[in-house]
Image 1 (cartoon, rainbow, N blue to C red):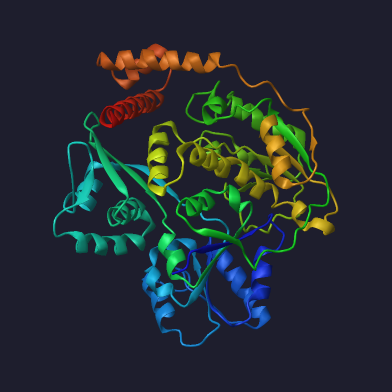
Image 2: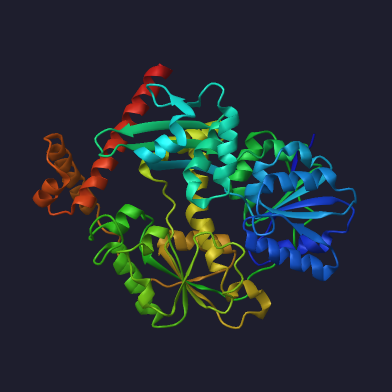
Length: 499
C-alpha cells in the first residue's frame, strides 16, 4: 500500500495546475480532485487543448448517484492514460479500494475539518430522524437497531436535495465509525428545538493508502492542517514532480492595516452596534467605511465572513465599485484587473465549538495547540493570501501596477508580507487603536444581568425593555450563555473522568 504524500507547494498563480497538466503523458490513470465544479470544467478544457480527453463527473454532468458513477468509471476503465476529474467532496465519498491502479492528485489543499452545529425544529426532527436514531441521557446519538439500511437510503435521498443538508450531515456522520453526533433538546422553546452537534473530519488515510501515488498541490501546504494530519499519521512526505519553478512576485504591494496590534475578532467588530451583526455604529461597520473612504470609488474586492453582509449588516449593495468575493477564493481568475482589495477575515472558531475542535484534533492525532494555531491560520491568513492573489499581483512579470490591500491588523500585515515572500509597503494611515476591552467587559456585565432576569422568569421582550435591547438579541444572548455553561460543565466532567 502507498505510504507517500507528494506535495507541490507553491504560491498562488505560479502555475501548479499547468505544471501538472504539462506533465501528464498518458502513462498513468489519474483522478484529479478539485475544490469546485467550476474548476472541473476549466481543467477539462485545458486538457482538451493538449489533446487529452478528461472525463468530468459531478452533479452538472450526472444527475444522480455521482458516487456510483465515479466508482464505475474507476472499475471499468480499460485503457491506460485516463483522466477523471471529480470534486474533493466526491473523492471523500467513494470506496477507496477502487483507487488501486490510479494516481490521485488533489488540486488545492482540502479543508478536512467537519465540526458542525445545527438547530432543527420539532416537526422536521420527527419526520427526518425520530424513527431512525436513538440517543442516551448524555445526548450521544446512534442508529436504531436494524435501521442502518434505511439510514443509507435516506442519505442518498438527502444528497440530491440541498434543502436536506442537515439530514446529509447527520446521516453521513452516523455511518462513520469515529464521528460523534450529539443531540440536545431545548425544552423551553415552543415549539421544541433540537440542537445537533457533529464532531468529525474528512479522513484521507485510506485514499492515500489504496491509490498508486498521491499528490497534493497548493500554497504553503506545510502550514495546513492536512499536512500535519498526514505527518501525525505516519505518512512520508516527498516533493511532487508537479512542483512548478519558484516565481517571485514582481511589484511591492501596499498593505494597510485597519487596527494596530494583533487583537481581532467577531466580538470586537460587533462592539458599538446592536451586538448581533455589523450594524451601523459598530467597530466593524466603521472599519469598512474607513476602508472604502480610502479606496475613493475605485473598483475593489471585498473578502470577509458571511455575517458581515447579512441583512442589517453593512450595506455593500449601495457601493457599485465593491465586488464581494468568497472567503475561500481559490481558483478565481476573473478579477486579475482589480488593483484594490479589502480583507477582514478572522480566524477564531466559535466559542461554543472550541471543545469540539479539540476533540476533532484528538481524533486526527494532531497536537491540540498546534492544530488550533493551524486552524486559525487557515481561516484567516491563508484565506487572505488567496484573496490578495486574485488581483494583478498574480501576473508576476506582466504586472503593470502595484496592488493595494487593506487588512485587519498590523500584526497580520507583517505575517502577510512573510507569506507573500515579497517586501511590502506597510501604510498605517488608516490604522486606529484597537478598541479597549472595557467595552467587552460591559457587554459581559449586560449578559449577566440578562441571565439573572431570565432565571426570574421574565420574557425576552420584558428583559429587552429593561436593558435596552431587542427580544432577538436577548434570545441569542441566552442561547450563548447556555452553550457556554454546558461547555464548562462538559469540561469539568472530562476532568473528573480523567482523574
